[in-house]
View (cartoon, one colour):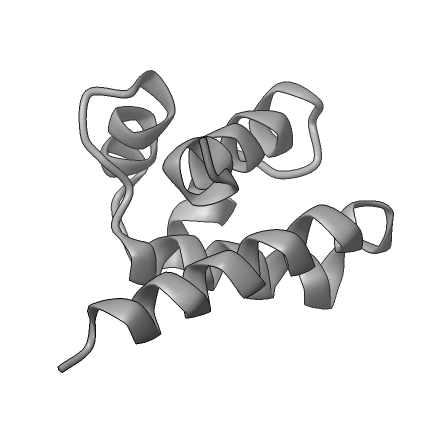
Length: 86
């Protein structure tokens, strides 16, 4: 399983559960509602690649302790986006 299949959700849950970010702050960064953040975190809704990319970039730019995870997610998301483009 690649990081993008669960990586965005895993990273989202990590940020929330470990207190790195509040749901409302993540919602602002990802340009979605807090309810949408909950739906991604709970697995009720698949997290789109573009929102995973936003999350990865946010982490790389603002949370030095998680920069490696953010970069891994960014690389895999951009590769999948390139593979899916015509």
